[in-house]
Image (cartoon, rainbow, N blue to C red; front, side, top):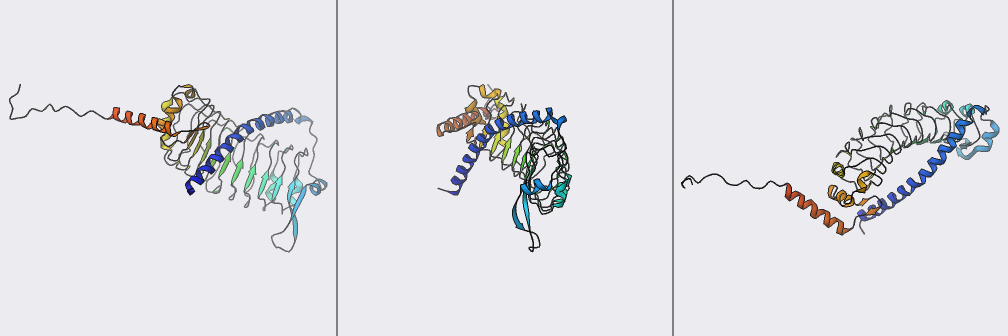
Length: 346
């Protein structure tokens, strides 16, 4: 078996996992929404609960050498679901590298600015209105899911690879500087209130999740040459404009649950040279009788539509249709109306 076949098998497995995760995430998001509503209902009853030395002692783990190599410190902290409203004590724990402060009542993350060795941060299900922090030089993974964040300003960590902002209240992406986020490969923005995809100009981005927003079209993503996965499920997209040949790495495109009605729109996806898997179920066009065949006619290199791979017979039929269409479009040779000058006119 060739390396290419191995890559294809890996790709197929990844996409199966992605769609399973998609269904599982729907359930998780419903549960998180319920949790969020409950926390909002009881927010007025919160009692100020600062992080204490006792909680720190209980939550610390993973003893490691410090930068000098001459001393040791605990570098991992988990204090999730402790009703915390204040984490000022963290300013003193400068050696922390992994911090989980999710499921609390935090509105201020500024104490984290002192943690210049931080590699991993999870601050989901709090009451944050911003993910703004000073530049953390080693931060690689950051999750601020299910808060009340309204913008994407103040996120500029040079080693950040994965950023999760799902389940917030973001209407527009602003402030994501490609120079300062040069290593960002995964951006999760599903379940916000986005009305536009403008502002996501991150050339190194590989995975972009924009499901469950209010998008009507794709725009501003034309230069994402490294993007391999684009999730646009459950929006209001009716046109497939906005894709370009520069998106040369895009392999998986999920448009499930949108408003694409005209199968002719699929011709615009020919611009994507490596598109292999397309999900279009729960769009009006998926109800057409020739939906599956027409998709392959329009995008010849497609390998999978929705959850089913194309068979060889389907490929042959699609090629025959494409050939017939090409022949119909070829202009007929013009009739030779010129008279032979040596022959008398009729």
